[in-house]
Length: 152
Length: 146
Image 1 (tube, chains in turn brown, green):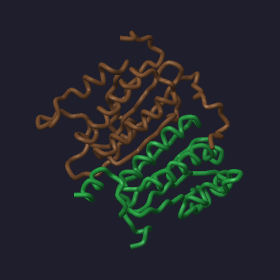
Image 2 (image 1 turned 90 degrees about the horizontal axis):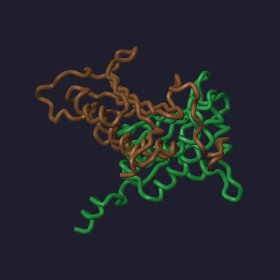
Image 3 (image 1 turned 180 degrees about the vertical axis):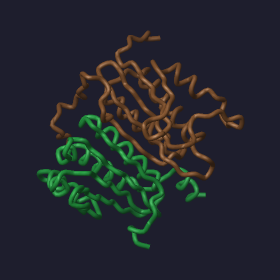
């Protein structure tokens, strides 16, 4: 059935990150849906022919960011969305994780170890935390796709 | 209770701008939501077939070439709301799923196949129904034999 007018290769943009993301996902912010996003991202990155180590880094960082949304973004019992956008060019993949929860604030009662964001910062080439124009909380991370890696 | 009133217990919105990315992403999302809805393996296979057909063809029937699908999992069914599509896109998408010697994949597999929407936006609803009483998860199979 593969008849989308392409030869199967994923074309890249020359202008970098496009105005419309190459991939958009929106799901209810629940623990079960973190796995859906991770799995979907596996397919996305596979189609980009990303090397295994980079793919593992991307999936881990995206999983951490999505888990943060599920655990921290919304008050207990409050329903909310978890959005993921991804855009790429020849050398970089930009992933934005977005929610409309309470924002990134210190939590003395946090159930986690507080390692999520430092881990993402280590895995990604860049990490930005902020708000979009609609006052949604954003975690924006960039990954190099053309990085030479030590086979070790 | 009719399927129309059965509440959605999970849903996902998927948008893909580039054709080759759509099948690996949409298939995984549909597969996971259907599996979590206790969709039996034969209908899970059908759902993936539908996802592949939509991924392959839907971009040709949207104004900007993007594929947008809302996947809704309910008790006993999985729905794909494909669109917005261009004018006549829903019928075009259905017609494009015809395979020589096989027939129309969407018509054969879906329990409901219905163009929907307003003058401005057209969608195609594809619903697959299934029996949720059959064992489909290891937990359930284990509990069935003990």
